[in-house]
Image (cartoon, rainbow, N blue to C red; front, side, top):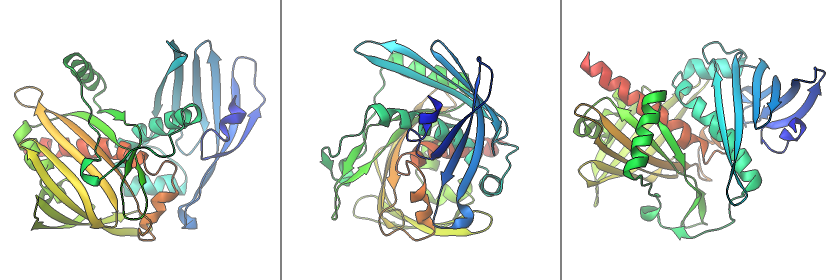
Length: 343
């Protein structure tokens, strides 16, 4: 029921069916993402064509800032009254139109690596919350115990490796919400775990990904890194300049970094402009020359985030999508760095 996309997807504010034949259905949607800076607000009408058959719904983009794209839902019956929903989607991000989308992709070309995961997560998370809302409050954890664990048995790990080899992209799992204990109130946090093949040995990959001094080589947006010893681990003060073409968003990230095992690093926010952040990365051998990276991370902006940075809080699922979209970007940037080293 395409008219009910209004209310299902938080950015869709209007839906209208267009005259078509009986085999396909076209609909015009209004998509709005208002942000505090009017120049960066998104307000666009998009035309999509839908075709339904049995357990499949295929969608083709007719008119959109992303000019060429298509997607397909499929759903399969599971035991106990449950349903498996899959979404396969593709979009050409190399020829966008419209000021906002064009400006963002020109200023941050790395977004192209995270957008497919972000789009899929946005659509599927909207459906999940429609049928299975998050509980209002669960068990509350201190920061040091917050990061969820994600275990794969041998058969599952081999399956994940096959998916990585087949797609050339990381495999990402979204965790149920967890609650962080703070001095003000419990904060709901969403984490994701990403698996990816890294083009370096576990030791070399770990030395790079766990050392903030090397981050400037991975990300041009990082301007300066200062390290100081801490009672446990190391404190890193990272200065970032996020250029969006028309404006630059400066912000500070302050992390405490610990290494509980030789190939595991744990990160926690201990100040800075991103108030809530935790993450863990672990490297293991894939073969003699490459590694399997397992990265679990989650974060959100607090009440006192700088004005420009708080733009992100206006986006839908701002406490979920950044971690899902950022993981492929981080891991792909690492691989580009290692490939450049080899050349």
